[in-house]
View 1 (cartoon, one colour):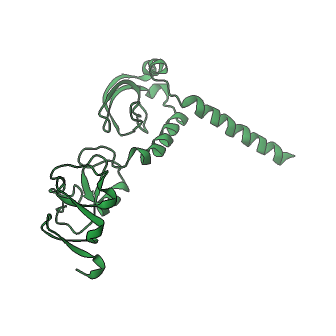
View 2 (cartoon, rainbow, N blue to C red; view 1 turned 60 degrees about the horizontal axis):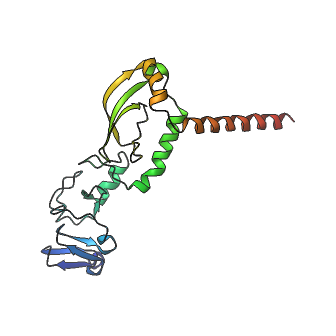
Length: 207
């Protein structure tokens, strides 16, 4: 262990850690040294770090690799979290979103706009019941889309289809009333504006 790693002994952990004692504070509930800048807002769970990383399965408590706490409260190695985030945004333990609501909101808004710009054809329409992994609430008579179904309660797209209630043109007619997409009109207006701009540009080129 080199001096650059700034080792220190934590009597509560029972062995030496790295990173400098002045930067960490021991949490007796979690049983782990927590970064002081995160201590007030961290999610206390008894024995949270007395488990293995859900990705690499290495012991979190004695590991020299930095740990990361997800919003759901589950812990994971920081380097494993970065690898996970490259292809999935959910906690591998509870399936809740692994990033904060604030960080995910721009992505969810972009997905909602993508759905508005790509309506499902009537023949492929489905009225479904969904369950949100984030807020754990259920919703009936939602319009299925291949990009996902957004939760009305928390705006998350981390939802799963629990049941298909209706399909085809019948579902399309029903959903036009039961689950109209609030962004359809906005998307149509944006498309019309883009088409008008392209038309104007072609006119200017001719002139």
